[in-house]
Image (cartoon, rainbow, N blue to C red; front, side):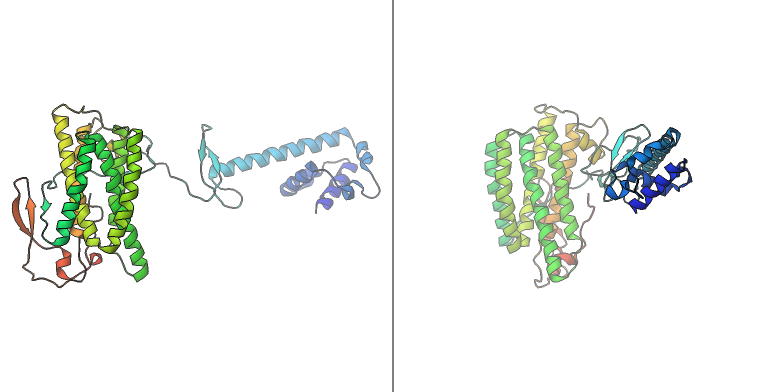
Length: 386
């Protein structure tokens, strides 16, 4: 094909006219690509003529071919730019880079995966990639912070004592440095939801069963705890030994909780419920130090303002308040999820004793789902409980 195009071009030169003027645009483009490449021997020797025979062509013809080839190249480049602006190449695939009107480059993906332009209500561009506007919420501050599950069964007592023992080294190490304590707490608190969601996911695949939404609920909890950590890192810059402690504690706790959840999901969720109760207590003490002036009430980080939809003049106190409310939600969810599947159903009038408020008053409440002989997947998961 290349030889035929070259021969046609030589005929046009010998006849004193431009071939590109009578050729179609697609042929002209192909011809330009051929002419730009060096001729091989079969093209040079055509009907016994060498390249010197081409030199007798008029200068006007040569200049015409060159100008036409330049015009074709410019038109082709313009078409490519137009396709780039449209976001597609000749094969219909998304191009790797497209241009704005002002000349700024916008990086896209060859595979068609690109982030749409997202703006806030005030028209400014959304600054975060770790969460989107539809992931934000206003925390429910009316939740009861004083609820406490009174340990009655053997497993409940084991969970309660375990959490109390774990608090001893934390109090010794951090004392009243609640910023660093909160940072360490969130690195641990984000683990159970991820482990539980992962194991429920694998169980759903093995048994071909629905999870009742609990996979997503637990992963939402893990993500929410991770956002707590991202906020606390903005407020407290961890030192090197604190980072080393995080690595150690997370590695030990992840593996221990993984094994525990395999052996007894009921005990695992109960431990998390009591951990959240301790978190509520720690954040309450944090707020007391802020109110007493022991900790400066600095402006809230931008990530916290956008994630919890706080006012633009939000402060550290506002951030700790909404985080404490989140921990109260996690407490309720994990105490509810502390189920023992397939036990004998109790009488419908059976109630569970819990402690409410600082006065430790007793209150009777309806039993959780496990008292009715059902599994966790039979209970509606608290999706979007924030």
